[in-house]
Amino acid sequence: MKPRRRRWRALGRLQARLLLTVAGGAVAFALLAAAAAYALGAQRSQADARRTLDDLATAVEKTVQIGTFSSDTVLLGEVAGGLVGHPLLLRAVIRDAAGRVLVDTGTAARPPADWSLLRPVLSPFDARERIGMLELLPDADEQRRSARAEARTLALPLVAQTLLVALLVYAVAARLVSAPIVHTAGALRRMQPGTGERLPTPPLHQHDEIGELIAGANALLQANQLTLQRERALRAEIEAMEAQYREIFDSTSAGIFVLTPSGRLLNSNPTALRVVGMPLREMRDLRETDFLREVFAWPERVEAMIREALRTGHTVSGDLELRRRDQGLQWVHCLISVQGHDAAEGGRPGAQRLIEAVMYDVTERIRTEHHVRYQAEHDMLTGLRNRVGFEARVERMLAAPQHPALCLLYIDLDGFKRVNDELGHAAGDEVLRACALRMKHAVRRGTDSVARLGGDEFAVVLQHAGGHEEVVARMAAHLLAALCEPIKLVDGRTAQVGASIGIATAPRHGATLQALAEAADAAMYEVKRTGKNSFATAWRAPPA
Image (cartoon, rainbow, N blue to C red):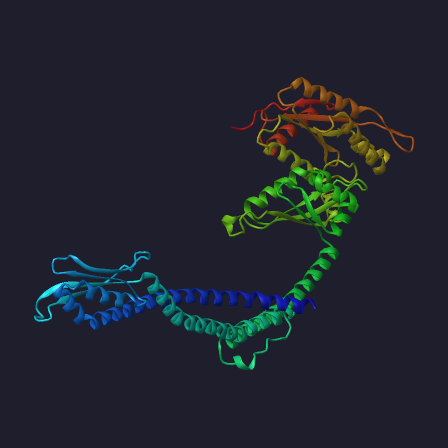
């Protein structure tokens, strides 16, 4: 019922507008036609009145000539009275040649028309002589009645014809135009988008504008159906791809998280939660806090990588340590890239640039690398740095732009060969470990380093000690005293060694490791040559 009522209401509105338009045009045309008919009727009535008055004047012309020539007012009065008896004539006035009124018959109770008929009165004996003037004044009321009658006679058929034509135009237009359009609109409204339904073309409109309109609408429906089919297929493909990518995103072995340029977390996958070692609830809470400082042990490195990625637009990678609350060491290899471009680079204006980070757990690799590096740079017997590790550390110190003043001590154990020969190599190893431990306890933790260069040769590097000879002397004396103390072995026996220490400082004795090593080694051998169990500072200056 509702669609039918809507259809009838739509049909009524369309036809009502058509009816009002046609009726308004018909009324306007009828009014114009009536006005034109009235004007035409007035003109015809006036022309008929003129002919009538002219015929009356012609009928009494001879009598008026005789009466005017003889100045017979009685005769002229009878003639004028007979003329005034005509319904159209209101007054009749006869004047002589001098303009004096001979006869004026009629009534002044009603106004005359705005025109009159003037006929010259000629002599009955000489047609060229004018002896007076006859004036006939018509009745204005009678003329108007005649004009209205004439106008009605002309206007009524014209108005009737106009209304009949308007009604016919309305009926034809409603049947041939509005009804098909409303029917087509209703059928189009009921159709489901993307279906194979099409609008039927009425038989009477196969080859006219209505048929062309319906054909165009069907073509549009066809195009819409094809577009919707392609869109549905594309949407299904996109949904399948999104599901696939979501599965990859959720199940990949790499942790993925998305950040704002300021480092605030936007999204992450489950692997990132496992790698970071944090439950989902806590990870969500990090979206409102500083994610980098909560997750990474050195957030400054991550911030520097983000700035580099934003600056260059390239992927930046590096190994980063995590701040794990449930484990000790946790390392990831992180790749940071920028998603989105600025408007100047062809991106959408106002689009936010996002930071995408992909991380892999490389804890085992880092541990292996650390172990390999430790083995390569440390002495397995004493746990001290070996020659390679020690030289690398000293080289880094010397290569620093503003390196602190360094002091290098070369130490050779005195009497160690006797321990090996008398007590055995196992005892010798115990002595080396004990001496290494005593030297580690004697130096400053965090700034100084102890190394075993090989055999019974050791080295110590002191930072912030160059130029302070008394400080270096106290440290050398402390080391010497610690090394000369007796060593109790695990089997109950006691061993004792001494030490010869050579000292070189930078830049006094050299600015390179080789120069410092040669100076300290020379000082150490000078101590051995002069009695052992002592220390000495190198005497020679570095070569120019």
